[in-house]
Image 1 (cartoon, rainbow, N blue to C red):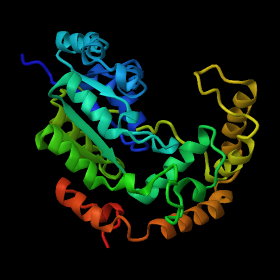
Image 2 (cartoon, rainbow, N blue to C red; image 1 turned 60 degrees about the horizontal axis):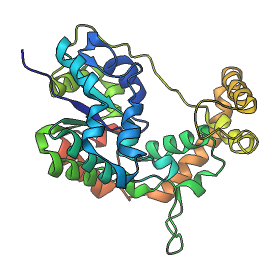
Image 3 (cartoon, one colour; image 1 turned 45 degrees about the vertical axis):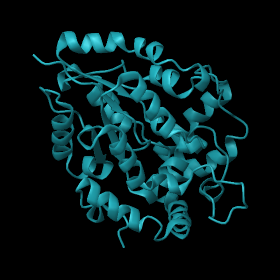
Length: 308
């Protein structure tokens, strides 16, 4: 019985990561072992928030030895899944290459899963995530206009989503056979094919079919727009889960809001957002997406990606 190789899933954000973490990676019947909810906070501490001058690969690896030992004992695929490993664009954190260097120094050889999403939808999802987490800025203020003064950058940077650059960097660093790219659109349109590709890459032996129930659904567009106002009075505590009564009240309020307010009320907001994004990135991703399609073999045009 050969030992299963470590798989590190770095996101990206808003690409079905929560579903993968909760429904696949944390379920032994799917052939994997991970943390309780599938998302590794240890990875955040070990590779992201660590003081760069204090990083030590042996110390970092020691945090994951129990996971690796459990995987070996039960013939399961060990998974470290944390979308922040690929950066945190909703909050202006871009450190992907530094984290990858630390991962290589810590684990040597491993398999890496990168999940992607059509960029216009991704920009909007990242914006909604930022507002859900306490942001107060407009969409334009978050993604920029492309005409910022020298020395200034938008929080959510469109260039981050030029996927071909990230894929080529990963393959050059790890080797082509150790990198798997899966689009969110494939998960939605053909979940069987998606899972077959994932299992073939990781070597996991699944004995069940995963539930396709959605996870971590965001607020409606209308609730998101209103949140840019109410967030000014109910800011989240940045130091953990001990949140104020104001924030807890507003989160509960919007939970009920989205269940009683007709979805059609969000149509105007959605339309304006789409126009804003299209004006910002029209044609910007065409060449990159052509290269990404060639690198991955996916028909990205049929999935809605801009290939011209």
